[in-house]
Image (cartoon, rainbow, N blue to C red):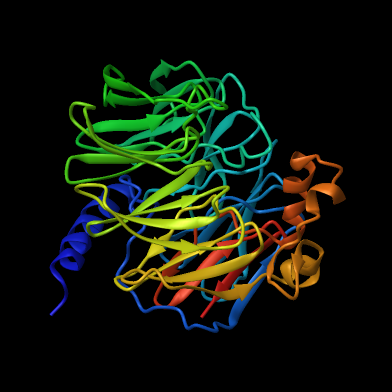
Length: 411
């Protein structure tokens, strides 16, 4: 017999996936019931592009969709990695797609939101925002859209949250925030839940009216409390992370606080859910945290050796996540035991430039190597084939992209 939470999540995922039509779930829960990947997986196939890939792959039927830094959206056969079609835009495609039965929808760094025919890659319509931009070195992603009841929702670097008619791209409404919106919207309780770089977390009605907004606490060096990544929602609660070092749990209907956790000295990155377990990745403390969703009790900490800026994909027993060092990690959800199970091609080549082979820790002289310029140092980490995309797991095969320009399928 399956555990109760697994059955509940299966029902939740099935319901939401119908609304999403096999795109990312509208509630952003990356849980799935499937066979796990081996502790030493083999490459089933890999597809090479010309530029880094940070967007997460999305599978619809037998097609895998992933955007790249070469301004191109690729459609691949998930079974073989063979290219089915590609579509070139005017900017990096650093957002994941969302699909319905007819179209693939996504935002590009050229400030245009695209709808393509899902089978042939032909343009159906496009919508021009007021423009995109990157706020800093760690602003890796654009907002990945969500679809709900025939409406597309996404955020933009022009500080707006948009709602478009999925059929024709006509603007339903837009909502102005005080900062760029590169977080992806989460749909729950008939509300669009999304954070902004202005440090506010917004709950909007489906007609674009403000239900409530929540001001993050802020921190001495990050007083705005910028919200960079998507939230997750379940059981009338919404959970999100902030650059003010906090993890927040709010009531989705009212915006009232349920609990908050502070991670000293580090941004909290991206949340994910597995039953009553909230999983959070972190930046400077370089680890994964597990909380009880109801009360915020910290259950365990799993240490990696470098920053993590992606979400954890989970099965009933394990979680999978990549890091800036080009390694893919597998985490036992019960114990927090973490192990790296795969290393990108670029990581194998460049790893010892950044890591001491004796200690398997980052070299202590890295700042001196980069003349005390930590921005240059972080940009150089991409030489290791960093895994910024959130893996997609299906039927015992794990798919993800890397800054070495490769889309990998492991089994």
